[in-house]
Length: 109
Image 1 (cartoon, rainbow, N blue to C red):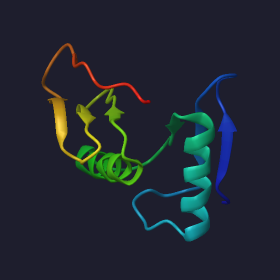
Image 2: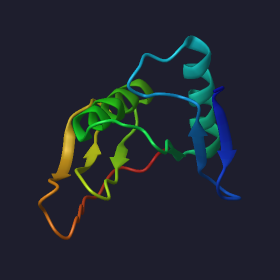
Image 3: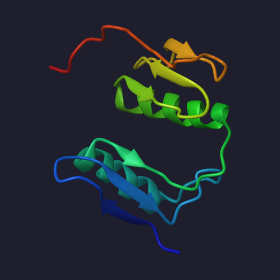
């Protein structure tokens, strides 16, 4: 199945299918996902069989790679805010209810 990206909202957000995030990305896949991040700002990767820790590792890599804060909003597991250097600024565990993260972060220039 080829990688496809579908617009989810008129202003932002895209859905990425045809990629398995548990396996290394090809160069073309990585470039397509990076271009989609630039275009949509938010990407959804449905039906990925990854653990919470794998999701966090992926998000930390993106934060460092793009020198930006990343928010991971887990609906059934861990939610966290990741700083551009890869460290977690705030984190909730799956046993925390309600999931609330409240931090002031710098805005982009």
